[in-house]
Length: 562
Ligand SMILES: Nc1ncnc2c1ncn2[C@@H]1O[C@H](COP(=O)(O)OP(=O)(O)OP(=O)(O)O)[C@@H](O)[C@H]1O
Image (cartoon, rainbow, N blue to C red; front, side, top):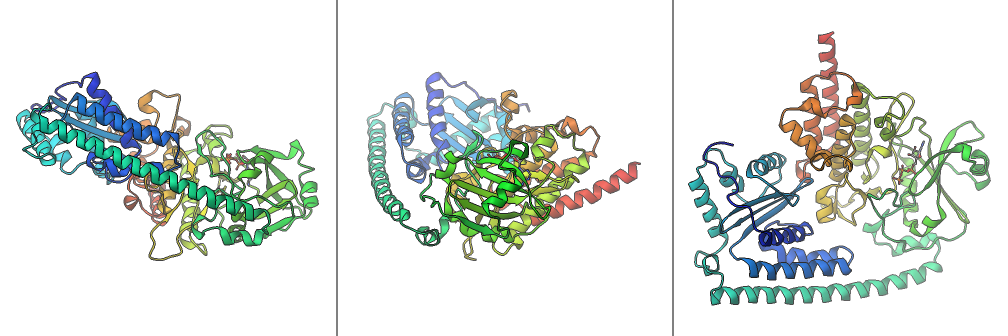
């Protein structure tokens, strides 16, 4: 640590720590401006934007309690908090010193500043001038103290007697007025939420009632355009990390329905799967069982058979999009051939891809992948996504890009599968995003989408960044069994890259030494894709081009060294 720089001068007392932690937790639910002055509006925004329920009330109550506690324990605190990538950075300055934390774990200033520097490079900004004041080189303790003091003065009036004397009458009055004001706003907001929820429930019951007497063809008339393809028949919660789809609003009719380019009857499917024989079973997912089917003309297809308990979560608005998805023909995308409903059967028929998932390969279940194979897989996936985003008839956002949704052919060509969460991008050229409920798999989910509910193609770019890290490190996005500081692969990899330990990042299964520069470029690209702010992420076309350029340079390097 450079001389003259001040370490956090004092460890906060338990009381102070509780205040910080409760505020930190509260800030976790906030959207938008991370400064504490924004808490009132954004905290109050969360109960309504998510499902309103007991947890929301608990959050508000916790917040009020924390306000009381804060008032009772000390005044004059300055607290900043923001989310950058997978990290929540929190800083507090109080009368006797400073407190820095990352994901609610206290860290020293050096570590905090290092992390902050990384995130700033990735476009995530903390409080204005914070870095220069607290993390700048060669700042004497005095200057730091003066700056820290100025920082407080910037946000609090110099005349604010609470900083100096928290028991002064004016301070107590101000604090009480603030708490009462907050309480009144919370009550008003909760009332509004409950009212809105009731109104929604009333509307919902009307729709459900109508649905029973409604033909499929007319069902889309009652679905707002922006809600299309939400929670489709291809997708139900599988793993515990999966964010579950919303409950069904539509009941399914028992009549037969065949859509897509491949029109099979139920008896043809039964014959092709040998009556869903276990010997034809190739996989099991959250939605149902997947079978291999041998058609009479010799073609082999995959048939996904929904589990009965998931019929309720099937939403038939997906059907209107099947026709569009089934028209997509790209070698890096698993072709959707059809969707069949009959009686108690719901079947999705897709192209069969014979060599398992990318995750199986990374786990070594089907032999180990070398560097070139991994790079080719990443390139294939980037091309598939670029096609969905830029070249298909309408923009399609996949929303569930992850290693278990990448299937491999015998030649190790990759195909993106599982369009269950997929939805159309905005057709309105002036609109940059669509607002929708958050769907996807935890670990791959774009933090900006989670915060704002605004979906753009850049959310797939974020997931791709996480996937690229997974391809090169072999690690899952979250590795629960590892030590705490290694659990989130993005954070662990970022730290290693910053320390210049790029070799440590490479999957030991790769078993070959890859050029340092080539590896650094791939990891940097992965971090760029997983930038916390979507504006800083490249589009998939650019990603594909960059990966291709890395491939070309790698071949040159290999030839040179041979
Ligand atoms: N088109 C296909 N061709 C070959 N195998 C497939 C195909 N689709 C799925 N599989 C196999 O079936 C398994 C289950 O697939 P499915 O898409 O139902 O579940 P998942 O994606 O693993 O889980 P979840 O849907 O819960 O995310 C896959 O892991 C894969 O091995």
